[in-house]
Image (tube, rainbow, N blue to C red; front, side):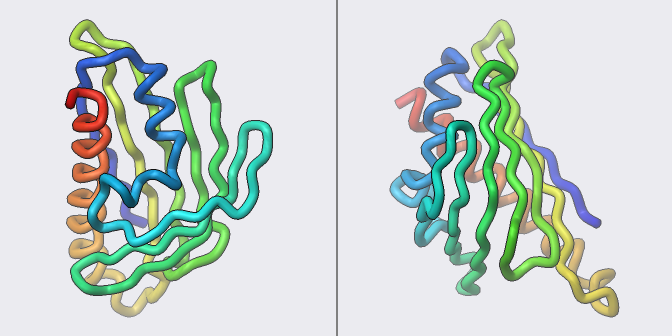
Length: 144
């Protein structure tokens, strides 16, 4: 199962960065690959969100459960249904001398074992690019 972790240092305090990351329904306004993010359920420290993305002209759709840990500056997510067999991971924010290091972990499985060897390297590259774009977009929101 491919796993991708990307990191970026953002010149800013972790609390406002956490609020931007937590506000997932706003992502399509500053992340060009996302068509929509809709919050289906909202709990005290959880949401269930429905995502539609456009990756290289291919529509990818999924629903995920997000759990927020504001005291730890961490958000976990896990696909509950969607186009991939598995997609889960977490956002972590850690204070560093230059600001806040933000990391995004994505663990995924395409779900077709016979062609996984061929597709996983391609998907891993696309997930890394998408993750880097997400981190850069969050950075731009804080440092603009």
